[in-house]
Image (cartoon, rainbow, N blue to C red):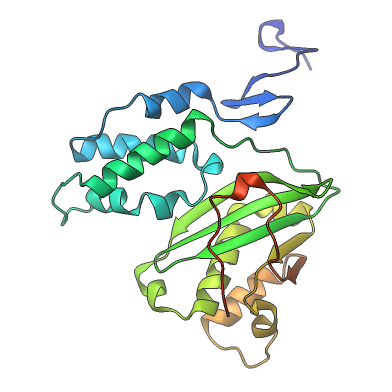
Amino acid sequence: MRFNPDKCMFGVEGGKFLDYMLTHRGIEANPKKCRAITEMRSPENVKEIQKLISRLTTLSRFLPKLVEKTKSIIQLLRKATKFNWMVECEEIFLHLKASLVAPSVIQKSDTQRSIIIYLAVLEEAVSATLVQEVEKEEQLVYFISGFLHVVEVSYQMIEKVAITLLVTARRMRIYFQNHHIIVKTDYPIMKILAKHDLVGRMIRRVVELYEFQIQYQPRGVIKSLALADFTTKLSP
């Protein structure tokens, strides 16, 4: 094995790695990618919205509930929708810009500690946050979000919760395989998933989730300022 000296760095306190900034604080968003959005003008056509969404996607792990927040903007990409950059879209755009001035700092996960997951489910969008508790403070590890499919929008809440957890498990598979997972929610998902009379699609989701070591606990109080924007509470 040989190392190329031009591509190696030793004894440094931080730097860019895989397009992220590694510092003593943790993993930070690339300032160049943040500026590409903060210095961007308001989109005037579909092509510019596509560019905006593409840039936001590269920073999605630093932005809570990204899909939920950008729903009104994403709808403008539909062919049947006439382009109309409304006041609501502009407010969302400005809010995202403000968020990227000082984006959240995420931490490298410690395999010796459990991963705690908070879930948020709305009518059409689902979100999850992965954190680890260090010295009684919850440190951010990852934000994920996504849209429900058209048929899933009409599902009962418990199915949406299961879908949210399943989407999280699929995207964060390496975390689920290497950590003990604690899902904090006030929804009685554990009791429902443990029923023996589940049928159809719910059985398939339960079987897939049984692969992982998952523990369910009441949501309680969120112990991190970084999660102040992740406040939707699931109520049974």
